Length: 544
Image (cartoon, rainbow, N blue to C red; front, side, top):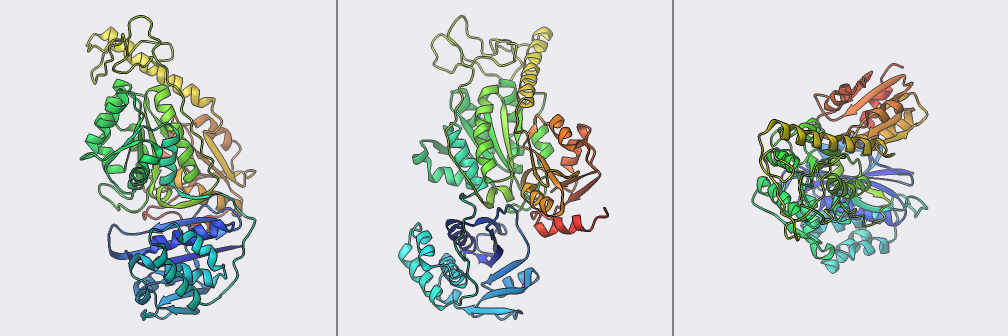
């Protein structure tokens, strides 16, 4: 059993909150829910909508068509008329003038509920339509600050709405309902985060807001400096002093950080950057999605230095890979980039989340002999010490240097230090070669037809692949790139279709660097995610 609901209105009317409230009720009675939020870069006005897709089987992708559409204004009707099915049920505000076909339920959303309170009104109307007991909605509303006022509005609309069908409790998917942003935040905390330093930039900002709201509970510091250049330098300063530090930003902010990214490479300072991709170059389309920062993240910065880039596809992977990112940064003393996108960051998933604090000790100086910050070692990783450590003079420098950290321009010393960092790169490569989770496989796993993708497209590729007989494959790490493992999964493939959100085909270019040549491609770059119908239409229309 699967249904989808669209709630549309203006910013400030509680559209997003309505979607999340409904989703939490559905999760509580056993459904798997995927919630996609669509909004322009406006505080008030514009057209916002939330799409809630739920099923008694796992769902991980947005769909275009809706079984139920809630329209708080005429613009919402005009925008979503194309998203209606033959039997779609419409919930319209009483003052909406646009006409629609099908079942229509008119309710006084705007007259009886103000602003964000309309979320409780929408929740009441929908739960009544689904014949879900009133108590299920009240249990979710209890978490709101102004519960009594919301309860009154919810109960009014529950009472005056109409029953349509019965959505019963199911023995379905048990899991937590959380976003990619929350996954990143919780993963960082459980990876030993001491301080999060960031300047707001959509779609990375929710991580900053979440950690700031829970900093006392988590026992961390959260700082917002004046700009992204100050941010990344503070991250390196904190790490130099021994604190596990992390930042989050989007493309424009990351561009400002690239000089200091090279400093992290030269000084071998552990650091984690959460890069949430947005749509288009420059300011672009701030509240929408794309996958066009892939090559930027892999090659940003001047000079050669090792880095690690992880690429989560959903909320659970955001948690696991961010937790791992903090440990990888300190294990290898390199910058680690957590490369996500708007649709991963701000969508909500229903997934099992078993939190566990995992903090691995880095290689530390044992106190014997003279401390050399950049001691030349076989694996390229030098023992760490921090300012204040007895008997240690701890240096960090942007210049090429000797083992002590003293500036050098001598060719032999330069080569020795470059070779040290390259040995570290090789150590990292070997570490990842032995990992079993560098590549994920889904869809129809026995098929010889492959959908090869990465990041946010994973869910839709798995669902479409299972439905139409395609094997879905994706790398979980973009650097070091698991080329050998990917090639193994592609052995014997009759066709390989690359699926990505990049007009230039950045992922395909990366694959070509490692000798992986697709037979076809599906690229979408309107800054919206790949809806399930989009991919099904493309695959169904191809000649086999």
